[in-house]
Image (cartoon, rainbow, N blue to C red; front, side, top):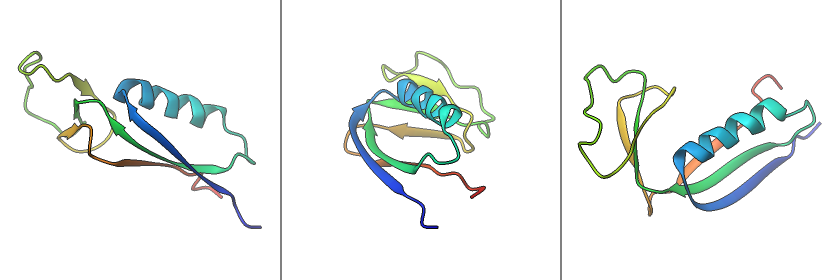
Length: 92
């Protein structure tokens, strides 16, 4: 059986809103829900991954800092940087 894959172009989006929408989408999906890839850019934001061991001074920049459950250190996201989020059911 061939699985369906849908692509979404979402424009410039807030990081926190997008992360919440991905969690909601993932929790609501059913076995027959098509996998999706979301293409977007984020409004300016620094994300701090769980591997970041150095303390980060909040307010050190006008750009917001958001703690994330992803791996890695600190990453900047902003307009002009294309991000692709793969929402795939790997158990299929």
